[in-house]
Image 1 (tube, rainbow, N blue to C red):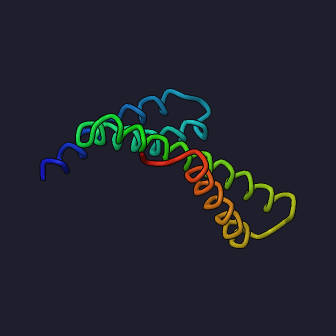
Image 2: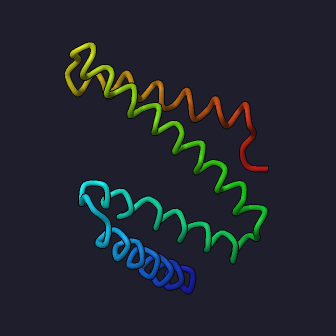
Amino acid sequence: MTEYVVRFIAGGVIVTAFAILADMLRPKSFAGLFGAAPSVALATLSIAVVQHGPQYAAAESRTMIYGAAALACYSIAVCHLLMRFRFTALPATIIASVIWLAVAFGLLAGLGGAA
């Protein structure tokens, strides 16, 4: 039960801080990047440090970076499939999901994951 309270408080504080930062940025479409993912990642890492130590949190942060790189490749692939090859949204996202998984697991296997 205590873990959930800590998660709630840490997550709320970090999400609020990022929401304030996002509110100060222009354009608003760019500010949305700070709405969820960075704040959730920081809350997760802070809890990981407290519960499992810094080595565990370091491994978690590496896998988050791999996931972010894979998401960037996925996004680029979707854009190319939609704009250059005129795919519709569903096939483009399904095909790009394969790219996302390949990049994420390739980075995990090649660079190492949780130690």
